[in-house]
View 1 (spheres, rainbow, N blue to C red):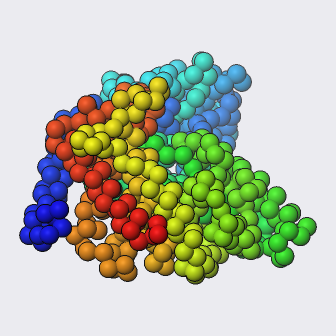
View 2: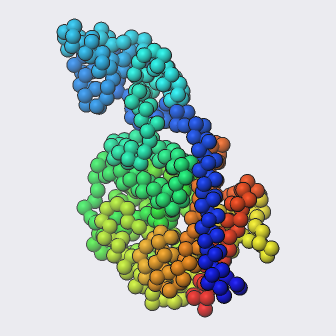
View 3: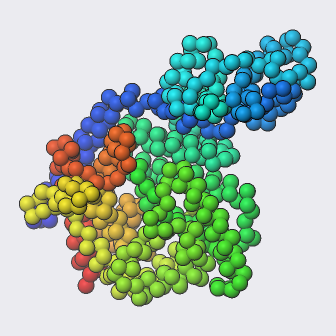
Length: 513
């Protein structure tokens, strides 16, 4: 081919790909910028904005007790209800000055005499926009939320303006300050909303997927903190490990959870070990359920820390990897591939890091394993036909589509994993693995750059597709109808699939023999 014979022509093609990617990115920014008003977070329901249970007291409660409740919860208002939970009034910090301090009201006075009776309220299903308009109309700064005639929450003007100033720092601070699962649920929704916003602003796929994974890491760590504080932990060294796309820090808008536990507890298989395992699994089950409540569905294959198969001692993990490496069949290795992307997330990170060092040395002495991993990777053929057109799915569930994950990004993920394992690299991210492989395996830099650009473009298409599905109220997936793409994006996607083929050709040459 001319591209292989002429360095000048090869350089032109590489630059051409980069230029096309830049054009596509600019088009995306223009398209989404026009939709910013439609996507405003002011359309969110008030129930999704409230991050904590309302602070309330019963009618007849002394002012001293009501003020203490406000102080303890660090809030600017307290709702007053009857015995059935129906809202009767509200007292704010502003009211305290004008109705308690200045008149010299005794602190044993029932709150009924100082509260604002019959307060303005909205259904919890009302939008943030309705709340802002209602506050402006009545000249107030707090609203009660009701559901089935009972108090469901309290929303402040500060809460509403905070959602319009959503930032990475704000979401991170909200996660760090969360003291209950409801606050983390809200943080999970905020992570998704922030990701949509940053995509609309033109953030590149590599940065955005890593950012999503980083924020999800924070949420997971905080959830484990809360569970550990509530139940206590066994006195052993242990580490929560992220697997799959989270382990690679490549999470998109549609992601479930893949995780595992590694721990130390005496000799593998003894009674003490089993007792520790049961304790850790009990905690892991609550964490997995909590992540599910926060928007990260349970893994359908049950690859989670709450599964006894994936809550193992360091010795048991070495034995498991040894079975996969020394005697695992093609199908078993295919299902186990995401375990090779593990990354420490919480706890004694050295346990996972030591396992990575052991694994690297183990694999480098086993060419059979690399050959089988390569054969598995080559079974996933990029969907290009003989005439360079797309080969579309005939699946009844997703007809006339391309699976951007399985047939798009996975050839790059699988190839990068094999390069990293063969070269003894400890990185888990696909782009980082490819770049390190270029240096270790002496693959030309322009070839690596083309693979990385192609991978990131497919990731960007996945994000855009999932964004559009969520806008339409659909569950996000990776099945894209290519007819919805612009002419430019179709051309780049075809080139990205061709780059996947080139990567697979190098894999076959280096490791299939």
